[in-house]
Length: 421
Image (tube, rainbow, N blue to C red):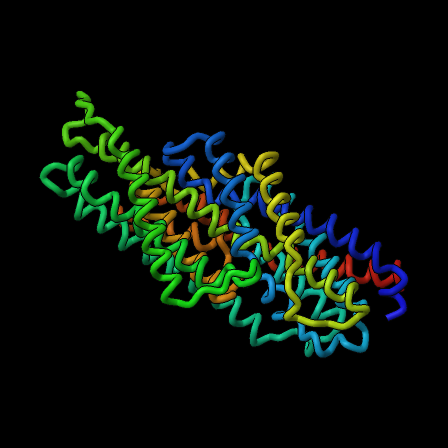
């Protein structure tokens, strides 16, 4: 208690710095997952991707980021075992932030799309198991989170496979693909608006003081989906059929209609990503602030201050702008060749999976989800469409992430313990 009272302000300043560094890493590495498909399919440029991400990542973090932060803060290390020695939680959370941020910086420099969720969870488990004892880690909760790393790519891959098959059947196999695209794409746009607003309204907005019933959320989501669909129809109306000599079936024109849709899915994915992955940066930061402000009382249910979500959102945006282009190239063009229609199926599947997980408080990996979705689209076209060498490198980087986060975290934990004693 005395150590927290003595060094409280230093702990908060360090937590804010490390939290911002971690959020920068999330932006540099993970936002590429949100934007990679849109840029890779040439639906939007890198510059447009950054503008979309700046707005929607920030909104997702601020409006819908509160639910998952509680899992990252109090769900992995058992707070009851730390009541006698609360400064250990402070050292641990600072170590976890710094360890995960450094690993993300290394991975981003190499262009590896690794999981920020893996990084921070591995780091928290590392300091918990070694610094506090194996019994301090809520292994049941870790098991649930770990199972989501398998379930989320499978779920996203399955949704992407089904979505792309529906696009093939309804549009590409139609007698007039361009007319079919004009008819069915607004329905897909409605789906994007409805899914994202439904999960945001039902789960995400309690910490900003808006508590709606399920029925109210459902009606508002229908309305929001209809508004988004209306905007899409107006934008789609500007796409005029062009007869190209090398495009006998008019598929090029269909892809131009899907490029309009990709703008909406890019916004949805950025929002979904901000809502889920801001927790990786601000969860441990919120834990430190909570312990210091309450003079050592550990409350896993404490509300996240609004400025902490703003700090996390700002760091994510800064990371994308300064360093995000390397991982965007890997995700967007490395795994399989993407067109707007394929990119749409992958992005909507990933966004749906992420917002559902964010709504249930499960910190899944956006990276695993999106790569799973891209694999699902690739498989819908056959194994030959996949670049297995790039996929192998990505999986290897995933396997290294947990031990790297844990190892660095243990090192920093004992360093902080030695410095502040």
